Image (tube, rainbow, N blue to C red; front, top):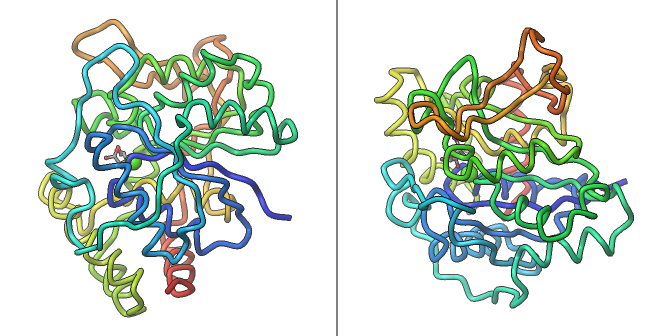
Length: 312
Ligand code: BDR
Ligand code: CA
């Protein structure tokens, strides 16, 4: 049986790799992409999502446009990592497929109400604005979401956009707070695990060696987005975050974690957007998140390479 997913995304080179991995995986039925502002403003993410679908030969997948800014705060972007367009690196043609006219938040609500309760997994790869707005506008959908598997947060690895906060949560901490307190089943893929999924030279070479349209684009994307993190961390390769959400759905046995409490800091200027993870279960707070802590990195790259080879 295929698993129905909706990918909520701010592409982003690593978002693009996640979308390609999903497109290459028959175990997943991707109902739609919903775009959000994050890595770059919405005017770019809405184009990038369609570029990636056309790269995968899947212009039939619907793209809905969601929120252009966080719920209560000014948008923070990451051009220093992703480039001006968010998808710098490959030279992809302007998309010809159209966007859907319905707002992304309304699409989420209508779809969750129309499909059988529990049948849809939401896969947020960017700030959680669209998901939180949908939960606020239509609280009844909380009981209808099968699971949310998201990339975001950090604890042991601390922050990447501030010393204490991970980018996706930092951009819209109020949205993260809504999602974390929604009662929905949540799996979180934080920096603690994605910092183990390093795209080393050997892994990048294996991707390039596939030599199809998708792999050539992924090579160009990762070679671009790598440069910042390689210098920052001094590691042999840069982390590739978002495809771990899709890989987790396909091969959960590659990942380990714990059911624990995660809360987000909303008040402090210094630690705004920090995910406070009760990893050692010091408090009695509800265990609202399956927090992924470790992974089989080579298993992840083997899967990614095998799947990219199936694309045009
Ligand atoms: C997350 O932030 C973005 O830069 C990436 O696309 C990823 O979703 C990592 O912190
Ligand atoms: Ca992202």
